Length: 273
Figure 1 (cartoon, one colour):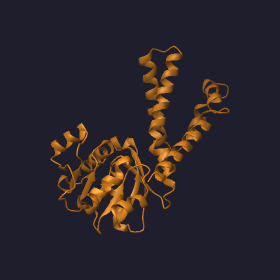
Figure 2 (cartoon, rainbow, N blue to C red):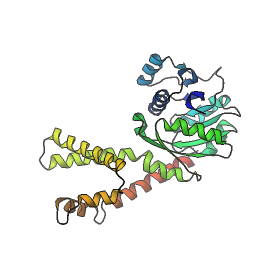
Figure 3 (cartoon, rainbow, N blue to C red):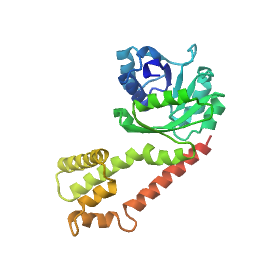
Figure 4 (cartoon, helix red, strand yellow):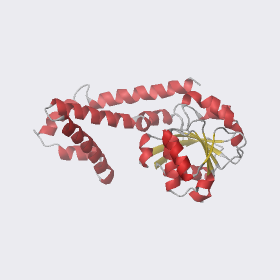
């Protein structure tokens, strides 16, 4: 089985939908195998649809089912959308939802019986550097799990979990996590300016430092803690800074609180069903 063998319907042509389409096309899913359903695609998606000649429908009326049905809409409209596309989920279709906070049982209730995968991806998927964590119900076959993995791997790495409750923590760590990294760059840039550096230079240093450190961690066989220790000389400047960041109420404690709050909100969204 390969990507060129999979027919897929994408419902939702926003940023995540665009990331998925870009990954699929770049990795061998034929344009002829893709259908997009969205009444109002974002501008970038409209341009891509026109450039690539992708089959685009404003609603699901008259569309035949496919191997894979991907739901990439906002959680607030999930129930309404699922009801409108439930005829697209045949007994041979696996439905993949990338909407935050919407459980497998919610999707099953609104879509009807069928093979369902709940996945959480993140925004680096826009450059094929995302990570997705997926959880399947017991109706998902081995082949369907493989299809899901192949499609999600086009936008980055893929991990599977058995316990759906873990998706709340996944959402808090990797789903929301890019915002934490963006905030780090913002804060480091602000601190650079406060320390007297020109704004343009300070923000460039912050961005390049965080991006470079991330790439170093990806390429290195050493753990982040070891890499940190290697940069920290006794009595040096890094040690002085880390004494603040790692002190009482510092970065580690704040991050734990932040992730706990995000996971709590994810659980609340699930209960809003």
